[in-house]
Amino acid sequence: MPDAGAERKVVEPGLLVVVEYEVRLASGRVVDSSEKSGGAAAFVCGAGDFPRPVEEGIVGLSVGDRKVIVVPPAFGYGAYDPRRVVLVASERMAGEVEAGKVVKAPDEFGIRRPALVRAVWEGVVLVDFNHPLAGKDLHFEVVVRDVRPAGEAPAAAPAAS
Image (tube, rainbow, N blue to C red; front, side):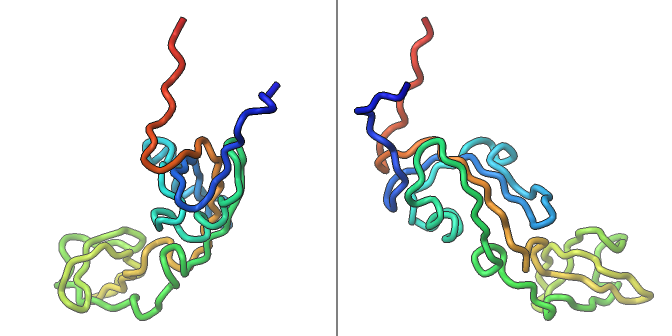
């Protein structure tokens, strides 16, 4: 039974928050998680280290609380921009290109950047420089694991007996 006098740790701006998270698309496909990224994420709430809707959405949550927060494209990877889908002459591409593959392609300034090959025709390649998650709502499921003043060291693990 919880100690009635125990202080409830509640997320507030300026506090260090530790969360586990999973990011899904509307389809349910997982595109990122704290597990994939090496463990729980620690950040100062409101400092801009996580998308603003997530930082605002966790305010008021307590340790152990779980919440799903939808992050619109404007706060994620931006809107999908059809102007970033361009034709590139085949001779400007390095190596073999195939539709559906990510390659390094020259942008409008000649700088090689990652791009998705949309189509290949004789002499020309249609490439998409948009981020793969551009234009997508991101569904962040977060679980608050710890809340403490910024700069305070995490609580020591209990000693083994």
